[in-house]
Length: 242
Image (cartoon, rainbow, N blue to C red; front, side, top):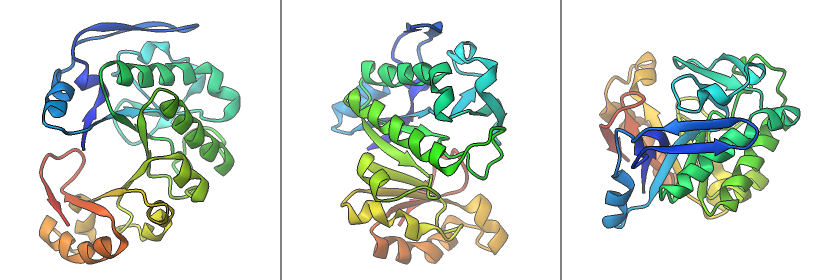
């Protein structure tokens, strides 16, 4: 399985229409053809997309109303969305159109990101129940389009029901933040936990190389049956697997 960016993977320019919102023109992506090449080698393609954040640089950015766009997520040009249920009708169809785009270009699954605003000062009074309901909705919408879907982070709301709703988990730095026990509902359900640690953060604890971080986390990762990669930062094509 390879994880590739959805917009970058668009094989040829196309117009995506969202009823009630308008349309967006997606150009041919800089990684056009990657899904076909992966499939030719028997590799599943999972496509990354934001489902809980607005990105000013995405082709469909102009479709989002300002009323649902909150504070910066920490990434340039990216802002939290108001994922409270009362706001879904004002932006969710745009997200579902991204899922449809993923299906239309051959993605086997999706990695929907930034669904975890709790504790991240999103600019809206989002509660635990709001975040949990949105995660479940995203999973249902992906499955309704025949896509495999992973739960990205969200350990603060992860439970047996959420582990049952998603096909796999993708966690970032649960070892660094001492949160890995919260991922165990996926393991108990017989589902994969894909996991990454970043040396850019581990430097604060004196682990400056991928090898040093591997020595710190890989034993525990294997005992928990996680599939863990150690990378320098996000994004980074270089990695050291456990």
